[in-house]
Image 1: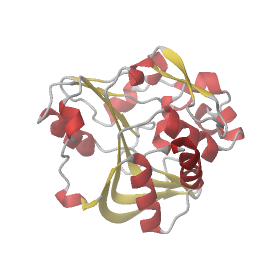
Image 2 (image 1 turned 90 degrees about the vertical axis):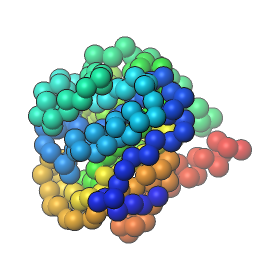
Image 3 (image 1 turned 135 degrees about the vertical axis):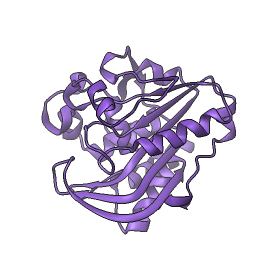
Image 4 (image 1 turned 90 degrees about the horizontal axis):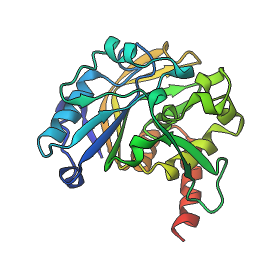
Amino acid sequence: MIVDAKEFVFKAPPAIARAQRVLIKPSAAYPVPYPVTTSRKMLSAIINGIRRVSDADILVLEGAPEGSPVRPIYQALGYDFPRVLMPDVKDCIWVEVDNPLTKPLAVPTFWVPNIILSSDYLISVAPLKIINGQCNFSIMNLLSLLPSSKYGGSETGGWGALYSLGIDRVVADLYFTLPFDLGIIEARQKFTSGGDPAQGEIEECGKVFVGEPYQVDREAAEKLGLKAGYLDLIEEARLDFEA
């Protein structure tokens, strides 16, 4: 679903009313405001929408590149929401989770924060970003949930070992292993960078994409005339997975 950004109000899906814990994964790896990171305004809209229908625990979870502390980034971005827990990925307890695909594309198991597994509803909310020609939308946003300390190297934010396997394949595997319920792409503006993830060109877009993560990423890519390898891989793997 595509809505006008000026008219966007987060309407919590019915499943949230039954949830005891809702986890929100923003894009907040750098102390740089929107559109590099998820805006405080968008997070506030989501939290308020949840509160209208539920008293569930709300968690905002992010990890910084190379395992740096994320709390200073939260502070710089104004993430100071009442009654919201804001853990750091690097401080979580890790659990090894099997990739449910019978033939994993790149990674048979992932180490992930245990609080993801104990949450009832999972939301990924990310800006509309294109980095080095790569779509960085709601599914790519899940990458910083992984511990950079376990996946090696300072390259590409501490996930050098994963990038060496082919990041599109890794992200497709991650989509099936961490089945997030909702994807939101904050597309009031489009951010395009040739390499530096914190600096680039900004264009007005005026939209918000909301829906199942694969669907919103596909819709955004098609709207912009972009190709995303991980989306094609997910589509192919889904046929085998559902069969």
